[in-house]
Image 1 (tube, rainbow, N blue to C red):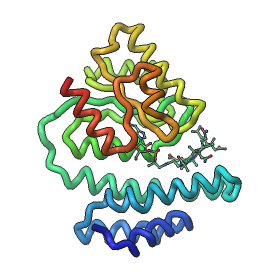
Image 2: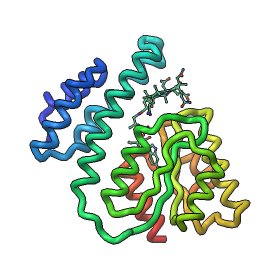
Image 3: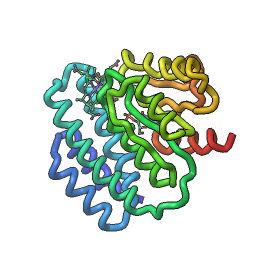
Length: 216
Ligand code: B1M
């Protein structure tokens, strides 16, 4: 279990937009053989949420939000590399196409989900962010995906997740390709309303739900 002082220090470095400080803590943590998801869940996610809250209240402005996002992205990249590199590749347990929906550039959470899925032996086609609905469905068809996963962070882009369900139904693929949705404004209720097969609250929940969907 991580030392509370390190957890607090890492969170503070992110909120203070101190990239060097945050990276130093992460690298040392990993080289000490500790689980970096501990740092992600207890320092960096609460830290970026605090930044988002301050931005929402007008206490931080867009340039500061962007610098904090850059720090978050850098530490996430290091943590994701450690997660993926440290895992022995097993046989493919299932194929997932994943993307952040059209009009939405938030991809930090989606990248964490991708890394944890890969670390658990799934083949993931990560299409990136701001991805067109049709392109996501085409890719899923092309790679014979079992599941499409989408992330939406804006209330204005959540409707793209509904478009995926409608697109799959129109293509006669609903039910054959399962869907999972996530992102900060997304809820279980939203997932049920649009007819998605699963909702995941966080990355670990995403892995669990993917396993459940593939077992059905
Ligand atoms: Co923006 N942003 N942002 N932003 N941003 C939010 C989302 C916001 C809530 C901030 C606020 O006002 N308090 C607000 C949205 C309000 C709303 O929709 N009602 C907002 C806004 C307004 C905007 C802009 C419009 C600002 C502007 O330009 N005026 C703009 C929009 C750009 C666009 O997309 N078109 C914008 C831009 C940006 C940055 C580029 C600066 C940056 C993103 C950088 C990047 O991602 N590469 C950014 C950031 C960093 C945030 C906040 C602060 C943090 C998001 C984040 O990375 N969280 C965010 C506030 C917040 O969410 N608290 C905010 C950490 C990440 C690990 O969590 O992504 O939720 P999250 O992922 C979690 C779970 O949700 C889940 O697992 C992850 C790990 O636990 N999950 C899944 C996510 N996807 C999943 C998929 C799954 C399963 C689980 O299966 C497929």
